[in-house]
Amino acid sequence: MSLFGAIDTAISGLTSQSAAFGNISENVANSQTTGFKRVNTNFTDYLTTSTQTVNEPGSVVATPSYVNNVQGAITQTSNPLGMAIAGQGFFAVSQATGQVNSAPTFNPQQFYTRAGNFTMNANGYLVNGTGQYLNGWSVNPATGVANQNALAPIQVSQSTYNPVATTNVTLSANLPATPATGTATAASPLSSQITVYDALGTAHSVTLNWTQNAANNWTVKVAVPDSTTGTTDAGSANVQFGTVSGNPVPQGTIGQVSVSTTDPGTVSTTGYAAGQPATLQFTTNFGSGNQTIQVNVGNYGGTTGVTQYAGSAYSLLGLTQNGVPPGSFSGVTAQANGNVVVNYNNGQTRTIAQIPIVTFNAPNALQNQNGQSFTATQNSGTPLAEAAGTNGAGNLVIGSIEGSNVDIATEFSALIVAQQAYSSNAKVVSTASQMLQSTLQMVA
Image 1 (tube, one colour):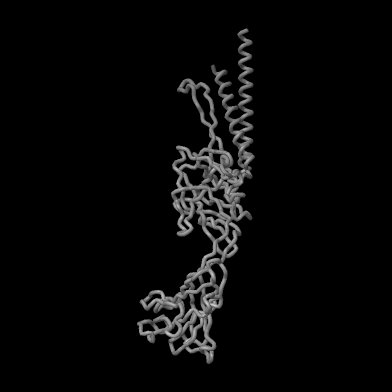
Image 2 (image 1 turned 180 degrees about the vertical axis):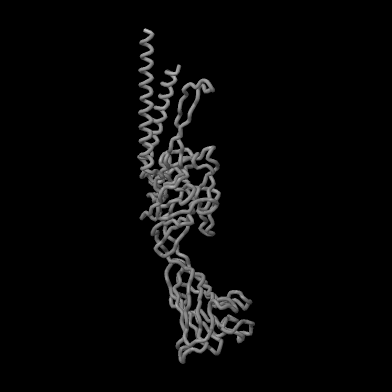
């Protein structure tokens, strides 16, 4: 029985070392594969009979030991959509199964990967080098909030950015308390010019002309050269500073904004309310219908917006508006927080999705699939999708990719050991066979 047991045991050794050799071969072959996770080999001894007086040869079985939780080297790439995860977690991806009406259909099974060499395909989807579609949370364009209840393949629309008509202008400036001679007269007011946009995205100029009537008392006239209403004068408002306004505000800050009695035009204002915005509104028409624009000049009693402090020169600190001209798609980028941002040539951006990081309690228990991807198992635990860098999820490294976690030197050492072990088992089989042959010859 010992000779037959020796042969059986040695053959199991050959089989096990062959399996180990296969794992080593796969590791070496994928040493340059993006996001690949190596497979080690565990050997398990199975007994037949083992007592204090008898030990019969058993067998050995090789089982794979997956190393999915060890990170590969992260290297930079020129691809702006290349992403690597520094720490724990995986990208959620989908695998296409075909097309219906020119739109891809997907396997309902959720897949996970560390292969972050994503690019945008012809249909605007973000796919990695193995053709897997990156999943993310959709972002509400109005609120900018991600819907964290559903994952779906991210598709980038290359449509134009629709124009936005200007509705708000914000002015920040300091009017001189003592203007230089001749600079604050009706003939030469202090001017602020800003570009605004109509409903079609066409640019127009609006000028705010400031004239000092008396100490702490100014008139601002709104001039609209492109107006189609028949007049370029949209009206005027009086702006008073400090206690001259009759309201309890610090000197140099706005105390009252009121419509001019001599040139009201289309101007309306908000009355005094402590700490509240001081605004004036005017209505004009650039050929696309009436357009009301609100000018924010700060808060009543506040030091932001328009003030009147010492000096003899007008100091413009900031002048912004919320209108947007039309824009064409110019590219898409990913951010470290996982946001996928579409860029337009008008300087605008739009966040369309957020990429989560999916973590598992036991990532080494994930089931290997094609293309460096994995699927969840009962032993891996429930997948948890988290924003990058939160609740144990790794951080996103943009413009980089993660390489294989295979170490060639280690694999070559294991290869030598496997080769020697295989040869030794083969020698045992050969020797046991010779001994069995000798025994049979003795019987004959």
